[in-house]
Amino acid sequence: MYSNKENINILTRLLIDFGVKKAVVCPGSRNAPILHNLYSNGAIKCFSVTDERSAGFCALGMSLSSGEPIVICVTSGSAVLNLAPAVAEAYYQNVPLIVLSADRPAQWIGQSDGQTIAQSHILEPHVRQSVHLKEPHTAEESWYCNRLVNEALLACSRNASAPVHINVEISEPLFDYTIETLPTQRLIRWHATDENIFLMEEIAKSFATASKPMIVIGQMAMATYEGLRSSVEQLENHAVVLREKLSDTATAPAQCFDEVIASLENNETYAPDFLLYVGGTIVSKRLKNFLRIAKPCRSVLVDEWGDVRDTFMTLTDLIQTTPKNALQVLAQQITNKATTNFAALWREKLKKAQRHALDFIPEYSQMMVVKRFHALYLNAGKNSFLVYGNSSALRLGNIYATNHLLVNRGVNGIEGTLSTAVGYSIDKQNAGKVYCVLGDLSFFYDQNALWNQRLGSNLVIVLLNNGGGGIFKQLPGFEQSPSCDEYVCANHQTTAKGVCEQHHIAYFAAHNAHELEAGLQQLFVDRNTSVLLEVFTNATIDAEMIKTYYQSFKQKSIDKKIT
Image 1 (cartoon, one colour):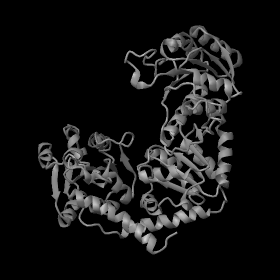
Image 2 (cartoon, rainbow, N blue to C red; image 1 turned 180 degrees about the vertical axis):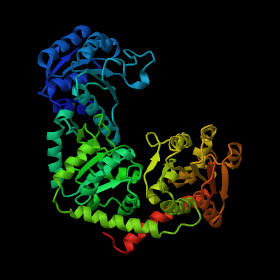
Image 3 (tube, one colour; image 1 turned 30 degrees about the horizontal axis):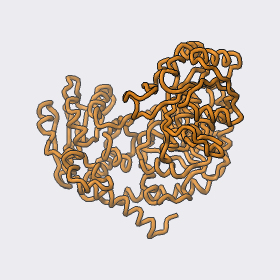
Image 4 (cartoon, helix red, strand yellow; image 1 turned 90 degrees about the horizontal axis):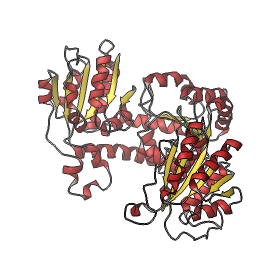
């Protein structure tokens, strides 16, 4: 029988699955449930040492002798501090120690309760990874616990070995051993760089034989995507390859996969059985939620740093290599392979979504602005670059852009978009124009970007001004609070005209469809100064237009029985 503490059972199972065989254990009551599980599982041999300082060095000696990771388990309070000398020695000798410290519930730290100190991260900087395991109460908290343990155990032996610290929060009662078997846990496998060739061949074969293979390409630099573009084109003949305009550099319409997913209602027919993820962030919440529910049999992340990024909550394999290397190996493996029915299914649906984006005629709104801007940009935007702000602007860009979008999506905050565009334009003054499309809050937050002596004539700004953070109006339940307009959206009546006059920037404004067309034409006129078009729209209409756009495609899919 095992402890009824789920975090301890998750930890125990993963220690076994990672092949840990020995543990040095120190006496205590708070760590009693961990000691019980270590003793009871039969796969880990325990060695009792009373003095924690000595126990740490004992574990160090065992690891030096065997070359294996050794667990050292202590109770709450000052016990873990006694391990610091041994952990520091292990860190500088690259010895894989796994420190398990039992901890009191966080709410009792600093409340004059017994054996309560701030234990989380207490051994840094002399551990490679330090994690804190709370007792999970939801499926997402259980996933988080699993992920943290996987991360810590991977870090212990990844590249050169090093000690790691897993701090385990345990509430009373402590001695409830009522669980018959340890839960099956997801094991994330990390593969060293020198194993990549063999490993990628094995994964590539698994990919080539999958019935429903899918590749997701996250944000990446233009040069990076260009390096793997030929592989992407080859892979699309066999599998589903989804990417947004944050990566795709082809002068072609956006895929509009977000619209497809919005129409599926979690239809399992479109869910992959093999998923490979390369690149950085993905904008689409729908895609992330869809793949989190899908639970593919194999879920592979390609990461040059070898870091765990479990975006879709399904990660099984972590490959430390470049996207270019990974996709080349996959492309070679599927040479002469027929298109899967899964890829054909998605391809047809994506074509219909692209046609819908082209055919849908929005009313005067931010959606109309971005659609018309990109229609003109396609013909007049040669030798130019696109910088986008986050939130509504970027989501609209992902519908209508035919070129790569540069956007600060690492954190995806509103600050700095305009400054980034200015910096880009300064660097590109002899290479072409830089077009920046952003919302009002982002613009006014960063308006000092225009206070720059190097500002040239190649910066073109499209300012979407609907008087506040309009994207929030798209969130379910927004209208239930009377405070949202003023405090969430930060409604305002500010205009950029004065800012432009101050910095000698050509200024144009649009309040309707006719003025919009005239203003957009001005963006593609050569002049000796930067230019800004401020388009005023209604935030409620903006939100309704997006909603109508998605609903109309979904309804069209139902009416025409798109499969």
